[in-house]
Image 1 (cartoon, rainbow over the protein chains, first blue to last red):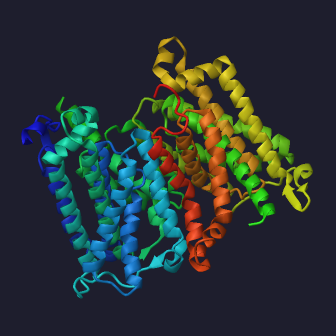
Image 2: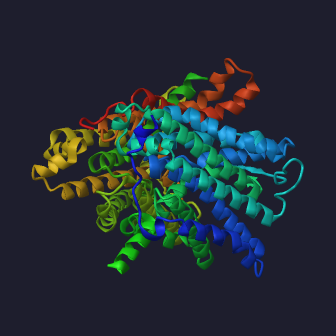
Image 3: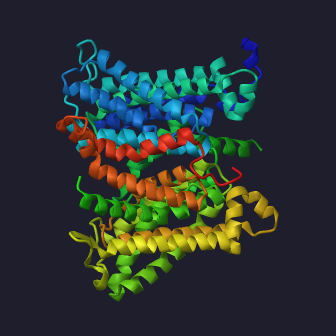
Length: 329
Length: 307
């Protein structure tokens, strides 16, 4: 039976991007960045890059949905919020151990993805975008009305998660490397998922759901599983974000945040996974840089996004491939 | 839950519904005819309000401000269409989302630079600033009635335009099958431009009309944009009739939900949890409604034919 899905071969890419060079380089950069940071403004650089990696996890999950399944979710920030609120709410009741809060963060976001996925996946295209937005808004307003946990103002997380009693995340550098490990794990998981038999059916459904259905796969289930995995990864990202910022508020789930996640994925290049990581880095670092240049950085950043949309098809990865094509003739 | 409050809130809901319709009408046409997701539609509404304030300061007359601001929003919409949007019509929805998101960032910050971050206000015309007695004991602001009236008027005009003129016929045809309309020799680009400009102007009109009772501030269009999307999705993308009904439903459900959720919950809950759950449920109500509608009818209540 495994042969059935085999003919759906992945699109082949040549050169640098076929191999593992780019991912290896990127993860190496992440691994040695703290060494360079040690020379100046260590806390600032560590904080910034940790943030980049946290959002890269969420962007990876989103790429799994939009790049490989054509499921454009406009409510992905909800999962980040759920993960962060799991840390915050448990923490306010004195439960700070990751052995409890991490499974809760993952479980709650996976559960939310499962329940909403059942409804959302009935719709297609634009309607899918809008219904995921609707569920994202519901999560947002629920969080805003959690009066015991700060409501609109959010909730301060008094201490970072411990692990079996040890405060391993208390140090910024430790948090950095834990985040890096999570990102690497998430990346490898998504990669093997996409290449697996499951992934071939899932990608096949993007190309032609009817055909996949006709040859005997219940596409809906495959999409639901992918949606739940992406949701859980979003929860992981939220768990880390809560720990990194030591704060959580409904703003983590706003629709603008969901839009930013979409932009990261498209900015980097959809359907490449590594593009999502590059996109998250490019987005957040550009934002940080422009915010340092002028208070009105959005006036520059906005038109930049327009230019990306109009000219940079396929995101940064796509542009890089095009440039390489030019040089090779 | 007194009758007086019910009547007043129903009128408020109607006013919100009419406002949403003004915004959603343009959005649903742009979406339906050009298959274009325009997140920047909300900032056009904001821009309408700001331009009205600016022209009011210049002329000191509400009517002049209204006319000038309408013209300016129309012109601005056409410029945006020419510079940005027309390059994105045949693109993926995601490219459109990024580009229009970028325009939101730009304009929200732009008005902050030009007019400052603090809220502005637009005085309403003297003659319409009072209240009328609707029934013994019920006073209602005239301006809100003016908004309801003008919204219904626009709805009527739109209905006549769309169902009884040649351009309207082309718009309807475009909503159900744009490539076919183009193949039959209609200049689809010009049609797009007309639809787009008109939609922008309606959003600007909504912003101008609401400016006297809301504060005019950066980001005021973001929340209403999402509501307008809810409206057009419930109504069925590309359908003016659907947008009209859905706008009224959403306006009423949202307003009445917010006023009465606690009271209704109290009927079968203890008062203290009711006070906590009520507001949360009220702000979720319309999204819940949208999820249910899409679950039952995945293409909305009145899908434009042929899609």
